[in-house]
Image: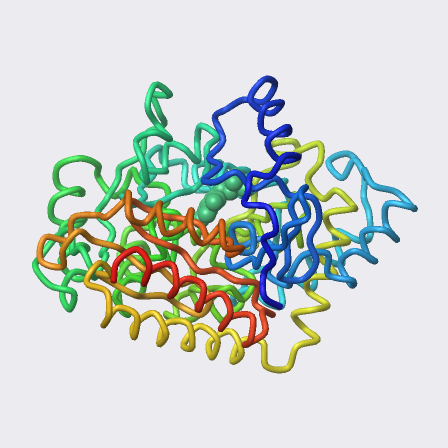
Length: 440
Ligand SMILES: Cc1ncc(COP(=O)(O)O)c(C=O)c1O
C-alpha cells in the first residue's frame, strides 16, 4: 500500500506533542525526524495527524513480523488477563520454561541454559558477568564500531560513536580491537586480507602490548555490526576469531541482539559463518515488541550459583507470551530463511543499480534483511556524506517512507521480514525519487 502523507509532518497534532515532549522528556534520545506515532499494523504506521507511512526499519529490527501481529497480540492479551508478573527470580512458572525449551532448539548444539532479562543491554551485562564469573579473568575485548548498549558494562564494550561515551567514563576494562570492515579496512590494505591482518594485529600487537590473553575473559562480537552501518565481516573472520578464542581459553560472545531471530535469513547470523559461540545474547525481535533479553550458553559455562544474578522482571509473563508467539510464527513459516535472503538480494540488487547512477553511493552490503547503503563525498577518499544522508532520510520521511541512519553516513534497510514485494518496490521507488531530485 502506498504511503499517504496528507499533512506534511510534523502536522498540527504532532507539533503539540513535540512541544510537550521537549518540556518533560529527557532529550537524550536519538529521534532522527519528528514522527509522532499513533498506531501501526503490519508494515504501515500512522502518525497522530492521520498520515500513513511505510516502515522499512522495523523500528530498529524489533518488529520482524510487522506491527500488531494478530498472533502476538492475541498471546499477550490472553496472558495479561491471567497474570503478568511471575516474580520469576523468586518463584517458578511454566511459560518461561516452555519458551526456554523451545528457544534452545534454535540455538547452537550444546546450548542448554538461558537467563532472561529485559533488554539488549541487560543481556550483554549478564554475559559480561557470566564470563568473568566463569573464567575468573578481568578483561574484556570488543571491536571498534561495536554497539552493545548503554548501561555501564555494555557501554564499556561499545565504541560506535563518541557521543555515547562522552562524559560517562571511566569504564570497565575493555580493550577495543579493529573490526575488519571490508569497505574501510582498518588494518592491512585490502578487503581480501583484512580479516587475517586484523587477527594478526590482535595477537601480535594487543596481546603483546596491552593485555595478556590469559587475562581476557571474553571477546564480544556482532556477527554483522549493526549501529555502525550493517557491516558484514569477510567470510572467514569469525571462524578465525573463534579459533583465537579457543586457543586462549577466551569465551566468544555473539551479540545477536539486532541480527538474531531470522533478520539475516538464519536464526543466528553466526550460522552463516559456521561458528558456534560460547554465549549468545538476544533481544529486540525475540520479544515481538515487548521488553525481553536472553543470554544463552552451555551447562559448563552457565554455572553461576543461586543468588548470583537475577532480575525482577526477567521472564515477565507478558514478554514471554509474546516471545512464544514469535517462535510460533517462525516455526510456522516453511521458507522464512529463503524468503528473507531473496528479499535481501532484491533490495541489494536495486541499490546496486542505483549506485551506478549516483556517485554518492560508495557501498551497498548486507546479509539477509540487514542492508546498509553507505554515502560518501567521493569514492576515492570515501569521506562520509553525513549531511546528504540525513537529507535523504528526512525527505523520505516527508514522502511517507521510514528509514533510519546508522554509522556516520549509512542508510539502513531492515524492513519487517514479512514485507510484501510490492511494498518493498514502493519504498525503493520513493528512495529513488528522492535521490533523483537531490542529486541528478
Ligand atoms: C547489537 C546490539 N546490542 C545491544 C543493543 C542494546 O539493546 P537495548 O537498546 O535493548 O539495550 C543494541 C541496540 O541497538 C544492539 O543493536
